Image (cartoon, rainbow, N blue to C red; front, side):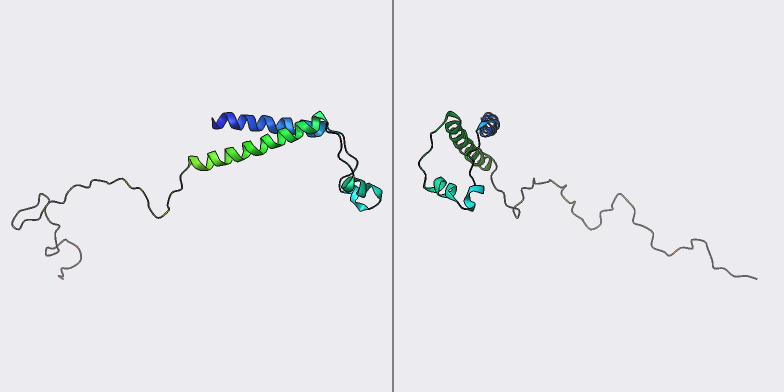
Length: 126
C-alpha cells in the first residue's frame, strides 16, 4: 500500500510540473507590484477565466498535498519509538560455578611458588 501511494505521488509530481510549465505567463507576479496600473488591476481586478490547465494544477496540487500527508502519517506509524535507556538483552546462560569443598583436590595442580633453586646466578666458589 505504501509503495503504491508513493508511486502515485511521484507520478502526480511529474504531472504537476508538466501542467505548470505548459501554462502561459500571466504577465504580472512580483514584477508588476512595482507600481502603475497593472498592480491595482492584479489586486483589485476581476476574476480571470479558469482554463483546463489551471483546474488541473489545482487538482494535482491538492492530490500531491493529501498524498504527502498520508504518506508522512503512514511512515511515522510504521516504526514505534524506542527508549535508548531500556535495551532489550537476551539472557545468556553462564555455566553454574562449581562449589569449592575443603579437602577436594582440583584436577589442575597449583602453580609452584618459589622455594626451589631454578638455576641461575648464585653459587660461589673460587
